[in-house]
Image 1 (cartoon, one colour):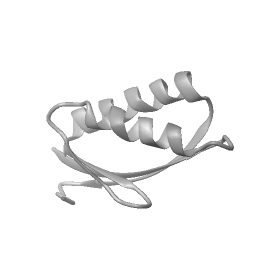
Image 2 (cartoon, one colour):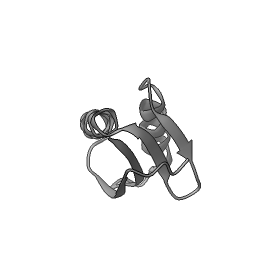
Image 3 (cartoon, helix red, strand yellow):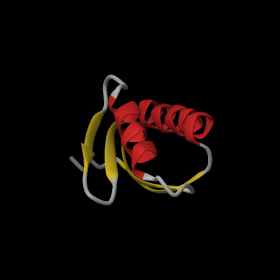
Image 4 (cartoon, helix red, strand yellow):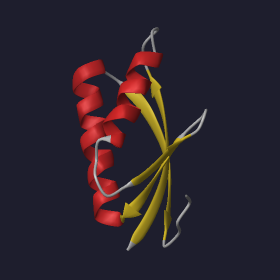
Length: 82
């Protein structure tokens, strides 16, 4: 099933830009997904299993590398946002 997810990351750090840039770069490393970055969010579109796995892996990776962050996400099933 197709899934579009919109995600915004808010690192709990004073120097917040590098973790956001790295998180977006990590998302772009996953094959088979359409990813578009906007000033306030990133939209990931693809097969539901791939999108969810990429988000899960990227959030864990980000936490291990940069520490705590808040992620705000919206999901739309059967909709191609891009």
